[in-house]
Length: 319
Image (cartoon, rainbow, N blue to C red; front, side):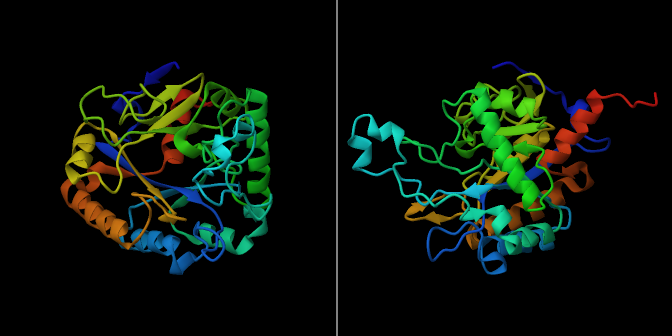
């Protein structure tokens, strides 16, 4: 995979020494009574905690990565099905919801809640968040570019039907972004992809990723991947220490904090799931960074960074 890092002076606004983004995956209309909650409880649930963070920190912005038509019920494959030759790779190894059950277009109350959140952009997190075979939640695996494009077009049509703004980027489920998916995203004029997570690699100059998703891309600097997509790496979560955040910011980097809206998925507990404890930690973190860096921090979103980079690549038509 070709990539070309972007120097800090090329993407940070004048007067800003570093940037900070918060993004949250798996957002969808859900009900904890029939499968694990994807934010369906709104103010009384995880999305309400996100709103409280936004209210407490007026500079904070958030990207909610929403799945267009969520069908996953459990992320754990069946212990029986995964032992059956041939079938194990051709069927869904868990129960799945019928198409349309959790479509954003069929839940206007949920969409209106998302649109009511201040300083919030909604990105794409796949079409159904499922795949046949053992890697249930990794939606894009061995599909060709045309198949990937077909899924993306369906997802975009659901966003349009739900009256949500067209997403400018995507965090693919499981962070998996094969080259065919990147080609399809470029063909559909997406601006960015967030397909790497690394909370372990030491924060040093020129550090690259070696954990989930794309490997070998910059750990804390935006980069170009493929022909024209910008890429952002998630590099901080609930288990990360504040010193890691400072190390990234001190190197004029992008501190990209990750969360998942689902804390407990039928027994699968997400360490970075949005709950009161994680949000309390984020509240402390944001307060500390506000004191330490003041006006030098650019509180932004992946979409805003990508838009700025795209504008820098396209000279003003009047000049």
